[in-house]
Image (cartoon, rainbow, N blue to C red; front, top):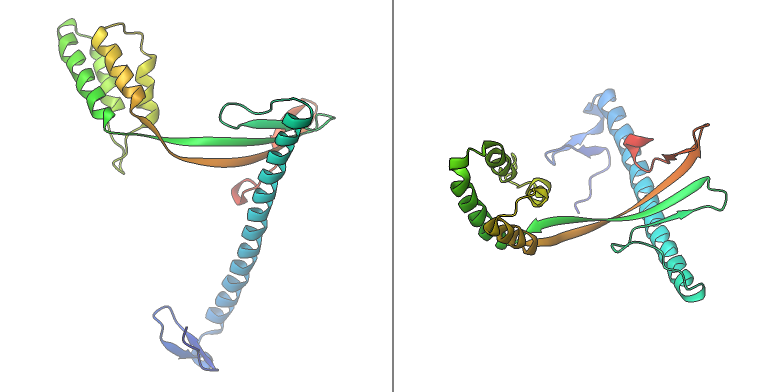
Length: 203
C-alpha cells in the first residue's frame, strides 16, 4: 500500500490532493464516513461473534440434552426452539435451504408439455396458464422454485403427469443452507412473542 505524504489526501481516483485545498465540508464528510464505517465494522464483528457463540451454545445444549436426559430436540432440518422457564423468552435456530434443479427438470418439463398438448382439446386453459407461469423466469433469468414445486399439489392422476412430478422431485437439489438465530420476548397483555431486532432495519 502506497504511503500518503503528510499534508495530502488521496481522492477517489488515487490522486494526491493537498489538504489545505480541500473544502472543509468535504473533510467533515470524510471524517463522518470514516467514523460510521469503523462503528459498523465493530458492530459487524460483535454480531458475528454473537452468532458463532450462540450456535455453539445451542448445539452444546442439544448434545447435553440428548446424552444426559435422553431428550431429542430439533426437527429433521435442525430447527429448534428453546423457551425460558417462565416462557418470557424464546430462542429459535432455523436452517433454511435454497433449492435448485438439476438436468432432470428438463425431462419433467418435456413430460409436462406432452400432457398440456394432450389436454388442449379439453380446454383446460387454467392449468395450462398455471404451468406456463411456473416455468417463466424472472428478470435475473432465475426460475421460481416455489412455483415449480407448487405443481406437485395439483390433483392430477394422469400417468404421464405423475411421471413428470416424480422427475421433478428427483431433480431438486440443495444449493446451499443458511442458518439463522431469532430471539423473541413476550410483550403486552396478549402474550405474543415479538422478535428482538438483530438487524439495522428492524431496530
